[in-house]
Image (cartoon, rainbow, N blue to C red; front, side, top):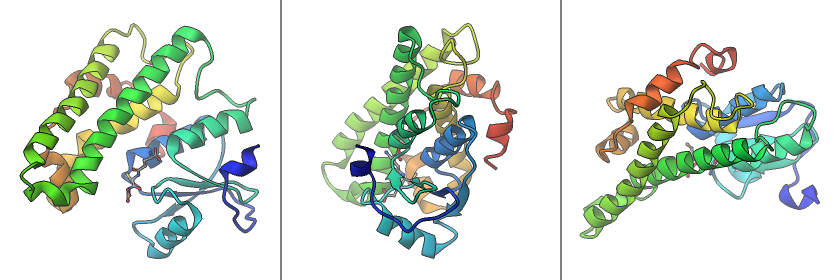
Length: 229
Ligand SMILES: N[C@@H](CCC(=O)N[C@@H](CS)C(=O)NCC(=O)O)C(=O)O
């Protein structure tokens, strides 16, 4: 059944992840692979244009990350990759908890992270060329209101925690998603001077709740987190 999910790719012996060093989607996928104890050859599509072309050819999604498994099968989208990894490597620690309370918390947090990131990336990158349109300020206000509401809700969720992780069972996809998002949002202003696209993202006017950074502080020294840089 899994075959239908993958495009064919010449057999490789090493698992490959096409990534972008600063991408929160790629970074959370690297955390997911580390949690599963899986090694991967990293191919940065920003520093190597040939890898960019290859990733575009391999996945119709046209986004990063893209995983190429050891048997050559290809899968894009960080969330799809993480669900696949839990099923393909069931004896390794789970990314997505199965117990109901943990599952509820994890699915809520990951969907809030994605609403915030995707709204901000859509306006800051994909549709920013429309910023001179008469409709821009209304679309931007409505979209950013959604993103900010998601960020604020995440701030409330982590403030209510009595432990460092979202799930009682420990480090999970929710922590990976939230940690990578916090890191990206916290550091994008530093990149704004060098990268116009980062400046566009900053110009949207979102606010990173300080509770999120305090929550992330507890995890910055994890070996898998430190290995990202
Ligand atoms: N839902 C996707 C989103 C991935 C995504 O948007 N990646 C960005 C890099 S941060 C990208 O590839 N952007 C290029 C584009 O959209 O053309 C995932 O979780 O992997």
